[in-house]
Length: 368
Image (cartoon, rainbow, N blue to C red; front, side, top):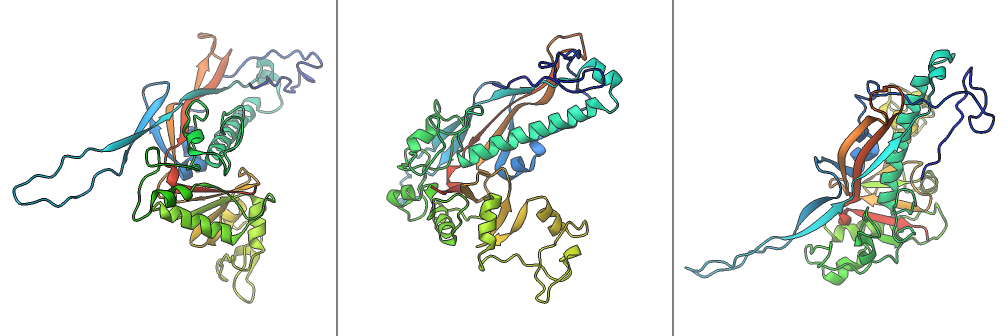
């Protein structure tokens, strides 16, 4: 549940609504015109991890995938081959509604010395961004969150979490990558000359060499890339927290190359390799560094740093295949709680669902 947040200060409503008895009444703002061009699916986190889908039906959505099932056979002259069929697996995506009511009063609109409506709308948009980013990150990393419902059985997904727990829809509607003891009867698919024992052993959630939060080891990353390759995928992205990035920077093996022309306002060192010291609009690389995005490459993988990433987990992915499905039943819209009253009783809401549906394309390293 989200607790109401009363007490927005204005020229006529001094102090907290609840605590000091401010006179402002809570009248909600109709944002229909303001958010008409706002698309939440344009968020970078969605572009990075999710295949966007839309649906005209509500409730749970089923997505079907074909499993490797057919094979060529030698036939004699005059004979016909055996008829084969496609094996399928289904992923059920739970679509839920999320909303946000913004407490802006008529007095705030009429008497405020600044644009209360614009400020409230901008913050509401940022709240939507924060919500979706947190939701995606928690789902990708398997982090427990009671409000979002992520994790399994009241805990984050760990190295000991079995595949059976992850695929149990009643306990985990958002799915996850491959857990321990996966079988070909479930989400695990045969690839190449790898045996069931090999592929099942190449699970996605693995404890790192060190249990210290933020610890980083090149050996752990190399092993994760190898486990992913056994399933037929090539890692191309590493997503980590600022703490992990700091530890990685201390290793001589990690080099972010810049030449003198790319150093921007940071200048160039004698060796020609320098990260820009501050933002330079003429240098797109310094822009990425300034916004906390792409940091360089390691083992051929793009290294991305984001403060939303958990401090004790690193994600390694092959993002040529998006691991997550994002099903949008209804984009961000404005609802009128009291139809006909317009400005009174309006709130924003949206209906969407997301789930990890391609479990082989991710590896989660856990400092535990």
